[in-house]
Each structure stands twice: as structure tokens, then as C-alpha cells.
Image (cartoon, rainbow, N blue to C red):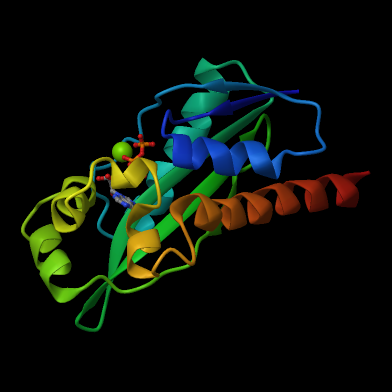
Length: 172
Ligand SMILES: O=P(O)(O)OP(=O)(O)OP(=O)(O)OC[C@H]1O[C@@H](n2cnc3c(O)ncnc32)[C@H](O)[C@@H]1O
Ligand SMILES: [Mg+2]
């Protein structure tokens, strides 16, 4: 089985590969287009980004399964929350989707995003580190390392793969 992952971000790739442990799979990583803004600003836009990535991965990579993982933010009251969504696409079926854990961003970070900046560079400046998005992620920083970006996406991946397996059981 060939699994095509619509990203080259190592934090996301690790989550996908660990979810498929026990499966005999071949992976391919492709930088697919999310078709949404670089910084999605709602659950809806983030879900669309995840689905677009998964569908493009499936098609362009000629896979059996396409995976799309997308990060965004969502307003709740006066707080801006991190939101993360994943999609698993297969041929001839609607894609499976699942969401990840969410936490609010500090006021000063939220203000910069509302001003049009992207979370990736803002986090690097805020932490004075490089490529946070490829490592522990914003969720890792603001949870004191208790839940890093890869772990958060691992959960999303388990929920995606689990739904896919459930659909196969129902059919079979
Ligand atoms: O290479 P890709 O797969 O695009 O990975 P990415 O890190 O850019 O991740 P997303 O496009 O899914 O995330 C959308 C935006 O939010 C940023 N972002 C999302 N989650 C983040 C996190 O946990 N830490 C830092 N930046 C994050 C990211 O840099 C983008 O600007
Ligand atoms: Mg991106």
C-alpha cells in the first residue's frame, strides 16, 4: 500500500509514519497545495486545507491513501485558539476528517496573527528559536513541552486511520 503525505514538514511526517506502524506501507512526501491561505483563520478553512492536501497527495502521488494535515487558528470569544485538522483520502469515497487538541494563544501572539502575520515566523521570533513549526510547534511551547506538534498530529492520525479501518470493517 502506498501512502502519500502532503507535506515535507518532519513534525507531520513523523506523526503519519508512526500511525501506520504494523502496516506494510511505502511512503512518499509531496509538497501539495492546500488551496487555502498560508495561515487559515477558521476551522472551516483549515479543514478545507487538510482535504485539499490529502486529495492532491492521493492524485499527484498516485497513492492508495493520501494524507493532509493542516494547522490554523479559530476565534472563540475574545481568544484565538490553535486548531489543527487532518484528512485521509482514498479512491471512490469521501475523505475522512479529524481534529486535534486546541489551546488559546497568548494575547500578543494572537494580535500579530489578526494583523496578518503567520504563526510560524511569529513563534520563531517569540521563542528566539528557528523552525519551531518543524519541531515542538506552538502547542509544544505553550504546553511546556507536554504535548508537542508531532504528538498532537499523531492523535489526529489515529482518529483518521481508525475511521478508515472502521469503514472497511463495516463493508467487509
Ligand atoms: O510545510 P507545511 O506542511 O505547510 O507545514 P507548516 O508548518 O507550514 O504547517 P501548516 O501550513 O499546516 O500551518 C499553517 C500555518 O500555521 C503555522 N503553524 C501552524 N502550527 C504551528 C505550530 O504549532 N507552530 C508554529 N507554527 C505553526 C505555520 O507556520 C503556517 O503559517
Ligand atoms: Mg504551511
